[in-house]
Length: 204
Image (tube, rainbow, N blue to C red; front, top):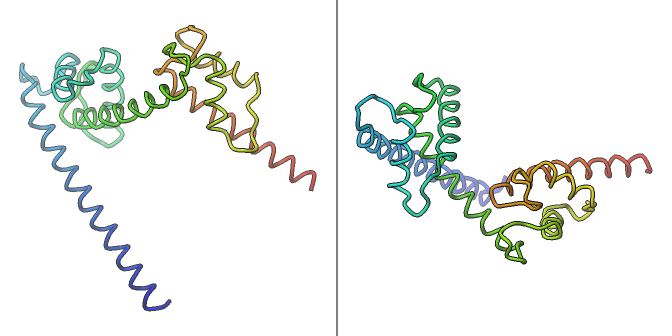
């Protein structure tokens, strides 16, 4: 390996180390903040945040995107599961989180908000009819965008996504149904692509 290559590799390693140090520092700072918030919103000093307390905490820190009751239920379920898998102490109340789970809950909500922004932008791009949902042809166009060049979007593919992901039975895909719709189509498209590759190998 040349001296220039060794030097470049060293610089790249140093950049990665600096980024990792910055990430760890930010993570510790985030944990410190959540611990302070936890004490402030644990108004009955129970050592846990009940659903309503967690909702008030997140609404106060993210006033532009306050969580719904459904959001809180999902966040609590996720945070308790993650805390348990990490060997953290979890509270027995199914509608509350301890301090460790609260840290995970806040991080999860931040990720959720970032994903929501991306989904809203995607919805705005493809909802050309401005109906508030992706109608059949709009959904098909989205599927075409997410498919590989050699994967064809069939009418039965659109039918399947609507059948599986239109939970509201509105005849289209709403923004809250968009993520599972994309995930389902990605799985179908990957299967179709693999089948086409296998068929090509047989022909060869």
